[in-house]
Amino acid sequence: MMSPRYDAVIVGSGPNGLAAGIVLARAGLSVLVREGAETIGGGCRSAALTRSGFVHDVCSSVYPMGVASPFLRELPLAEQGLNWCHPAIPLAHLLEGGTAVALYRSVEETAQQLGPDANAYRRLMTPLVRNADILIRELVGPPRLPRHLFAALRFGLPALRSGRGLAEAYFRTEPARALLAGLAAHSVLPLEARPSAAIGLMLGLVGHAHGWPVVRGGAQRLVEAMAAYLRTLGGTIATGCWVRSWADLPPARVVLFDTSPRQLLAIAGNRLDAGCRRQLTRYRHGPGVFKVDWALSGPIPWTASVCRQAATVHVGGTLDAISVAEAAAFGGRSPESPFVLVTQPSICDPSRAPVGQQTAWGYCHVPHGSDEDMTERIESQIERYAPGFRDIILARSFMNGSGMERYNPNYIGGDIVGGIADVRQVFARPLVSLHPYRMGRSGLYLCSASTPPGAGVHGLCGYFAAQTALRDLRAG
Image (tube, rainbow, N blue to C red; front, side, top):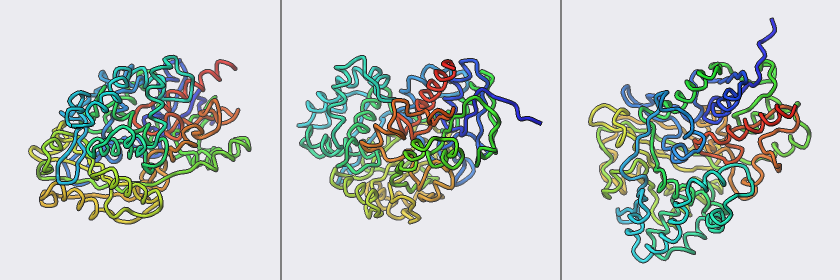
């Protein structure tokens, strides 16, 4: 019997795949989303990784770009059960000696901590935060001419620097430099590489404008809300259905892949023209991550009080210390003193753990495909700033770089950001093309974090890819 024909089939049910399905279903198309795993979500899943009663986010957890996303904000996801939980402080960054600097929702409150650099921070961030939603709409997506040119230049000129270059150009003191360095390190680039400053600036301005929240009940609730909304539009989702070859797909007018370029090539390479295949083959993936999840008997005993109020804590110290750690991972060496990103979602979402107890996780960047166990180094870093941390660990679970790829095939070598985001792959992600989502003239589209605007739980890669597919369908 002939398989049912759909207007669109989407491979992968991460936030981008679901976003693409929603856009296409809202346009009246019949949509099937196929997911290989038994649960939807990609990097946006939750599970009891350590003990019963403890809800851990398997990969991502804190979503500044999710709450700021112009696409997600327009969806009626609250009606489907989505609730954001905002910590009292979006982010804290630990400094040598056990002190810390915080990114508050208020630019002014943040600046007041920075002493001689207070005015410099105000000058840098105030105009960006004032135009935050304009900048997100115009700059977070495929390259295009901005309509608000002056606002774009206010962001773009400093953003074109490296993280180190921006920190040293604007600030004289270590707290301000370290705060910006920690933000820029989310780029998974060496701090000396451009445009790591762009990631840092965007995360900072979004933190001020919208916060760094978690999802009540776990990250899984976000994709469950998106899936529920897609079903109200008539979309179908099939789990436990791996797509390993073109023969695994039902007939469809268009197929969108929420996958890495490598998986697209493996499944549909012979349907792509030679130029497209050549560019996708050259696409580069960067460092991986090593992640530890903890079930804790109580809150992490940070010596700096602001860290007890922030769902995200950067553990790495100075600009130079972070720079050394990130350069090591990018250069193929496991850092001896890693820069550790810690999340403690249960400080603002008590549903994550039994009463009085906590969940937390920490990860650091490691060489691509690394199997090295970084648990001791991560916990030693935290213990430096939270003496007694090891004493409250009830259970732990970890995943190394290659384990990340086994869990989610999109995470090539443990690369959770969908490919190196250096200058070359910011403007050629994944192709040198005015239409980076369209894979030639074959009715195939890529809608994953390997397309603009890249990594982050925001759904915008799926949104823009689906818009491209719609235009092509309407053009005949």
